[in-house]
Every structure is written in C-alpha cells, then in structure tokens.
Image 1 (tube, rainbow, N blue to C red):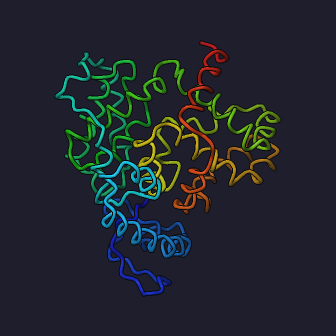
Image 2: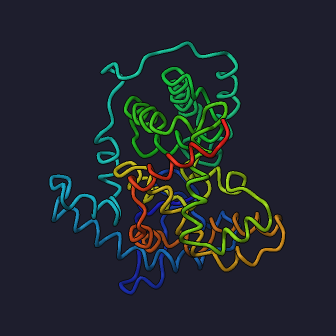
Length: 333
C-alpha cells in the first residue's frame, strides 16, 4: 500500500529517488522501503519517477485555476487527480452530517459488535496509525456507527478497510464517520444478507465485459465461473486491498464525485489491459491467479494512465442504471 504524498528528494531528471522515511504520510510501509522484502523497489521507483512530475503539475494547476469554485472545470480536474491537500475537502463536499438527522439510530445486535471487534486488529495491521489502540477504538466506533444507522448492512467484512482509509484521509473522526455512512448508504444493497446489489452489479459488469472484452467472457463461460467469485471483492471494498493505494485514492476521488460508473470503468479497464493473459487460461486456478495478478500489474500501478483510459470508456451512470434494470429482472431473489 502506498500513496504519493511523501516528500522525496530527487534529482532534476527524477531518475533516482531517495526517501526520508520507510512509511508514507498515511502510515503505510512503502514497497521500496529497506524493511520491505518484496524486491520491487526499482519497479516502484520507475513508476514514481514518471508520476511525480504529474503530481507536481496537477498541484500547480489546482492552485492556479482553483476548480473548486468552477463546476465546469471540477470534473476534469478531479479525474486527473485531487492533490492530497484538497482531498478531504472534496470528499466531504456533498456529505451530510449525522447532526442533521439524515439517518436514524437503531439497536446494534451483539453478534455484529463481536464481528467488528474481531476485525479491528486485522485492519491494515502494519499501518503506523491504525495499529495503535486509540485509533482502533476510533475505527470500532466508525463501524459501529454504520451498523447503528444502516441496520440492513450491519457489518460486512471489508468495510473495516474502507473505514480505515476514510479515517486516515479525513483525519476527523466525526466527519469521517459521516462520510463512511454516506458512502455505504449509497451502496447498501451490496452488503445485505443476500447481497442483491452485488449480484446485480456483477451481472452488469458481465454485460459490459461482453461488449468491451468479449474474449474475457468466452474464457469465463468456458470455465463456467462467475464474476462474483473472481472480483466481487473489488466492489464490496471499492478496490481497497485489490489495487495499489494511490490507484484506490484516485478511483475514490472520481467515485465520490461522479458515482458508481467509476467502479465499472476501472473494472473494465483492468480486464482490457490483462485480456490476453486472462483469455489464455485453461483452468479455474490459472484464472484465479491471473485475476490476483491484476492488482500488481503495470496497468494497476500506473494510476494516471489507468484513470485517463477509464475516463474515455463510454460507461455512464445512466447506462449503468439501464443495465441494472435489466439485471434485476434476470437475477434470482
């Protein structure tokens, strides 16, 4: 896991990067840290050397143009990346507050509380901030608040990672919980007992892949395997723990501002970028391995290029809603 808002010293050519700390500003160990044994230091240094100029350029453009006050510019600027200094503000821009009485409180079953407590130490256990007892209690309160205000969701494994990222970025317990409840409530049918929303959207993704990546669908049908088994986690956790952290943050920038279309845009883009490897699979085990490899692929790492390719796809919230209507008629209750 990593983000870009670390402050490296680098040469003018950006060919060699030296980092001052083994952890980034959100408390995650950097993959190129001397403490990390993944052997991927050069890969990430190469990526960051190409990404750093983009980050610097976009930060300057945000400060010069101030798209926060210009709705005509804001979508384009969000798609090209929100600087970390503005991310909290933009994420919270349309988020209501619990103080406004938007959500009612309900009793939380003991079993849900037990599940939450079990997952607290499992949530990014190596993160510098989330592994402290104080922050874990904050995380527990955030997850309890979801169960308290959205009883149809209660608690679902994976939401702990979503909550962790929101707490780290927003860095304000009350507003982070507001945002968590707001975002989960928009996708609450992913988390109910029958997960009807997730099953519906896997059907939608199947339709999109048939249009944009037909070779992938041929492989899935040949091996008789469903997307829910392969990539259901992508949608349940909004790609947390499936993609590099900077890619997740860039995706969330767009998802929070524009909506669910971005979950589908990214999913389709990733399948397209890995279509040859996926379509060559002869067994389910091979397919599962290739799907897992997507998260460490170059397409996933080079987030700016991924976002630009995804933005160009003709997938909109309107087209998603139309496909959902069809899917709801075809999936069993």
